Length: 267
Image 1 (spheres, rainbow, N blue to C red):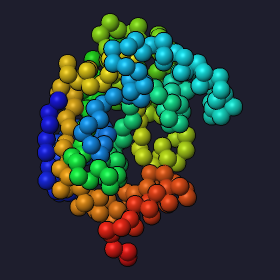
Image 2: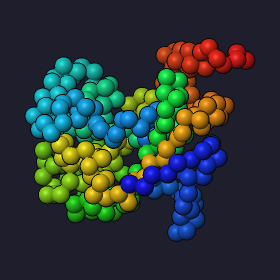
Image 3: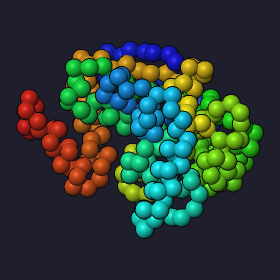
């Protein structure tokens, strides 16, 4: 995976929008999705992988988590159906799953890379993942669905047409593969974050490991600690704040608590 370092807001914008012109449709359309973190100390590990010791078989644990979440949260589920409808809802409510959160919007990733003032003395990172490239390694039934729909990412219904359960999904190919799942807008938080999830076909193989075999599918942009204040202030001015990320009183409270913390002059 290529590693790049920027030094200011302008360089960060230039990097995430590099090579986005599509001459076929004559529009600026990026083939990348984005994920931000306040520190590089956190690799691309799923919540499921973080839950268990390294090298443990995560598949039994995953089955227990999904079965019991479906059982105990049945009254809260917005829809019944396959694992593809359950997983985004469960991930959204912090169940440890094999999914990783991404956004179509680079600005949303910038937010998560700069939102925690406790991390301002450390490097942040924005990961960029090229889903058009990763789609080249999908098994044939999944590539066919994308062609039929003229799409680059999957919905739950598209995945259901090939495999309704994770164990069926994992058996589609011997070699691990990665795809992107765009969830329904379960609430305004998902809609406002332009959210989607990466899904790998083997719970025991994290995205970081997959990228070691396919480094051209991703790059990471390092944000030095010295660049964070400028990026954070310009995001605030652009309206990319907790008010947008977490709609409602909770988001307003988070935004105000951060914006007016000591050291920032009240406006």
